Image (cartoon, rainbow, N blue to C red):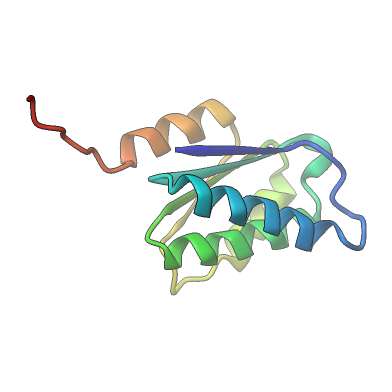
Length: 115
């Protein structure tokens, strides 16, 4: 599981492409079973929500469960209203610990046979 915390102001003009690029690079480098994005209070902006939705589409194309956690009720409503219904469902939580626990339970288990 990859957990990415967005803790900075994401309203700058070039913030969305840079944020998407960093998350995309992490996903492709680590090949996690699921991705959890945590939007801190100051980061729950329209720009960050748009980036999360774009990451969700990318992860869905890779077969990855995507979850997001934010205390911001307006951000959660925006995510719910704009999530791509053709993709794997975007899981939205108000609490980070719940998002991580849920993603951990939903991640595929890989059994390695004993040698």
